[in-house]
Image (cartoon, rainbow, N blue to C red; front, side):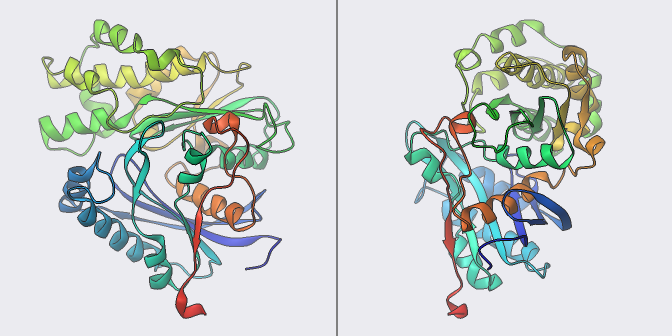
Length: 368
């Protein structure tokens, strides 16, 4: 791989919603995003999702972890092998547990194995180095968000909101010369987003998610649940800060006595309320909020956000971006930064003591 100049990189992401693997290519030098390439999606089967769910919260060597890793590796090998022309691969793996102030972070999947299967260098284990240096290990997409803000020609502060299983915000000053410059970025997890809604749909209706927000649209929000939820100390902690998918178990417990529509409506409102609460930490007002992740397809959730933000709230497609593939693209971008010795997180994104580059690089032995 050349040490400078743009290259095609391939990234993959399997998020906390456990729906499947996104894979996408970008042409980048690790600073700029020059071009978006092909992309693909490989859904997890119901059996695979069950295997992954059974391992949630487990650490290496724990029950079900080996089976979950096999699912992750097989799915990634299948989808990544469809691509050609990439110089290297960014492999995030599947987060099973995340406890940055305790045991660390655990993403299932072996990048060295994928390097052999694909015959390409694979950058993986992106989060551990950040945690070793005192960071939260998440979120990691903000450096890519900064590059996208530059690409779309933003001039005023703006924010990206990712609504996956967990929500996270990235506040950006696009006038800054680089993402690691103090004041350029502030990023943090906002709270539960799609995960509690998806879990409710699966448990109550046997559905993977609330398609089009139709179930939530039929219910009435239980305001007392939202008030109790927002009283959690997490919302008053100064960012950066991060969450695990299964944090806030009290939220799911609080809606158990409600009808399914009322529970869905309340969980959807809670996801939006967490974002609004998080925005109170922004250092300056934003000119627009660009939404990525599966939650942007939920019109009920988007309406909650639009009513409570004083600026336009839009899916990232409004800026010419692909909200389904943005996180996969991010790990392609980050892989190039790792390979070129550039930082992938900083104090403003994870709370790490200084800008740090994460990631381990595995090269196929067959390449010599």
